[in-house]
Image (cartoon, rainbow, N blue to C red):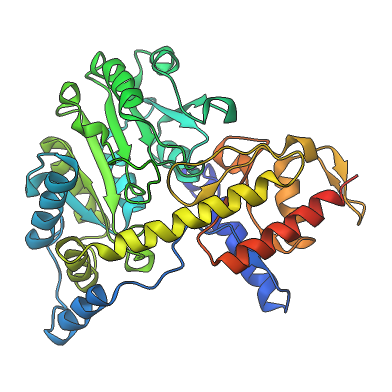
Length: 399
């Protein structure tokens, strides 16, 4: 009899993927489900990026790539970081992986030892805590709520540190809340982090281009006091509608980049040759497509905020980035559905909305934030209007 390792047994399954799968199963059975659980743009990859991939195929770009990625792509990423973010990373400090999640996993596995603590402000993306556990580390969550726009303060951050703290993960714009730290707020966090130079700052910036603040994106790595202390996680999936191409990267201090390359060399080797060439075209090519998609997401943001605020009992903030709404739903917990089910938790509510309202969402508990649900508005205006109509009717039916 084969056994499953405790390492895997201890992991929780991704609830975002699980809800998306349940939504797909209901759809396959003939149920008209609107899926607001999945975190990916609904746009097609821009044509000039697809053309670069076709050119790579026709040019027989089909051999193993260097473990950290093609030098030409790493140079394009370094140029992007300099041009857009004012960051000075050499190509040797950049490692291209199979998506930003892979890049994040590499950084955590290469830097966290068993027993090390990793500070994670919550609500937080479902994989942060699980990847830390996979490395043998201890996630230390610091909760935030809708009253503080889901953002951690310098005082809360300082209070979370102990002698065992090895890293902190900051995501802005945030998945699942859409919250964005201002330059002044990041400056306050940077001042705390700089007093703990042994702590690695993992800055998840995958949603940097989906921003509604009217200003420029600010990277944590841009603060001089954090020089050599930040690992930036990013990729092409969200900004360029390339989720399936699976290209992300980390930009790290030199020793960490070497460690990540060593780890990746034993686990996956280099990322897809064709996808890397497509990503290179994304970074080097015209950027109008990024702004067109951003404007569409902003219009949808305004739509879903308005629709959500029309539903009595929902607590709603105005997200400043990404494509998620994270309403507070505690007013609907502890009630009974028309089919007799008791809706005790946000997980129960998400399942009720899926099975009875035919709208797929994700429970806040998956993001270490019970009492909320996450809705993605990366779908058409028509779908969003219908989805919120269904949600409103389903919530009104709870007694």
